[in-house]
Length: 112
Image (tube, rainbow, N blue to C red; front, side, top):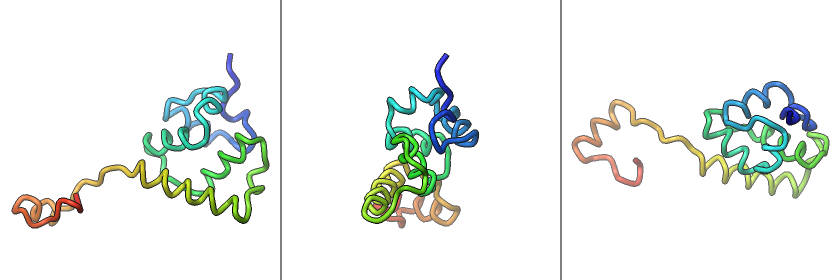
């Protein structure tokens, strides 16, 4: 049997449950995906993106304490996180007024 996700440093039951919802069922599977691909799957499965959660995952996969990330490294991780979040942004259903404006051709295509 494979080691559970929670066997990775910094990752506990909540991350293990989130990974299971995303189809990541073992520590080996998480390591094979890597932090960015795994976090993308987590977002796609409905987990709300949170920068601290992302860098805790990155640090854990490197075997480092969760709070070991600082300075330029943390800024670079923030850029990666923002890119992941933007790439996995769920499509938003238009509100009532937006739907009506779209029906009559007023909403710009770029906003859809």
